[in-house]
Amino acid sequence: MNLKCLILMFVGIWQMTLFAAFTPEEARRVYGESSSSLNLSTFKEVGDYVFMEVKWSVDKDVSSDDRESLEMSALMDAIQKYVEPPVIACTNSPFSKALTTWLTPETEFSLPEVPSSVVKEEEKDGKHSQVIAFDATVLKAAKASASKRAHSVNERSVEDWLKLLKATYGNFKTLAEKRKFNVMLGCPIVDFILNTGKYELENANEDEKDGVSEVNRVINWTPTKDSVFSKYPNLLWSTHKKRESNLFYPNWSEDDGGRFVKAEELYRKGKDVPKILTLLAESISTNPIGEKKWAYLGGVLKAMNKPEDAMIAYIQALKFNSDDPWAWKGVRDCCKKLGFKSNAAGLDWYFKLNGIK
Image (cartoon, rainbow, N blue to C red; front, side):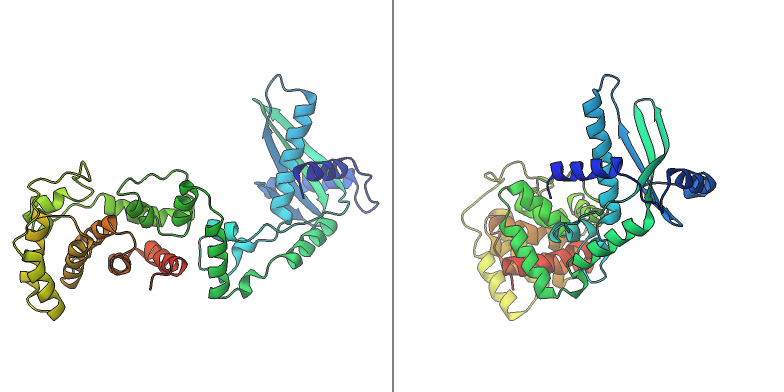
């Protein structure tokens, strides 16, 4: 249903002939008796009436046509909020309120002739507001009808949600859309990793802020005194905390003296973790290029119960190879150890979406 049709429909509601069961006088009387306890924000049901508060801004020089358009737009928004079924309140959605709303197509609805009347009207400092009374019986019937036509959100399975995710993701045309999607999915850490540490987020919804807060902890990470990153400055320089260029590293050398080969051999045997850590740190300090080195370092640090440092190492690995499933799973495991519930849960879905096993 397009905007023009909706506006015409609401104009009809505004100007309609009132039913016998609904009179403006009775609506004003009920509102007058109940207004002190209504505390209107958008709408309130009282007996046989639904009272809706409609607000909009009006410029001093606005034309009558523009004023009517603003009035209809505000009224349309209020009625949509009342009539549309609350699909975002479903009990089984594994996603945030914002993402559930995005994935669930808006339910089309149509309104019968709903008797209405303005019971209060004010204009102050360019702000206009009206309280409109609607016949509750008719409006509630319209809402119930819309609810029946709504998608059966609570009946969706994990596979259904995954299909919705894939269909939505497949329609994105820009990087900005994909970045916003990852934030809504609850794993903004994907955005941070894939954009090589350049993390920008505006207008996050309230239910997305946990994931954002978790990423900010990673951004503000500082190694402790006993951290391997503190002991080997070149190691720290390579991370998002110090790096100034992806193409230049201090004291870079092709030959690490066979340290990584030896570290990999010990790693696969699961022997001498402290020795493996030293070899990896020295190898990376000499030549930091290569996802395997950083991924192994992440694995060692995770085994040593240092999830914050391990997270940084895994992120470095993914900057060299963003398709490394082992490093991605390492990031997810570190999120769980650090209590990053939003990013951990979001990464599980991100893995399903991108075939990471």
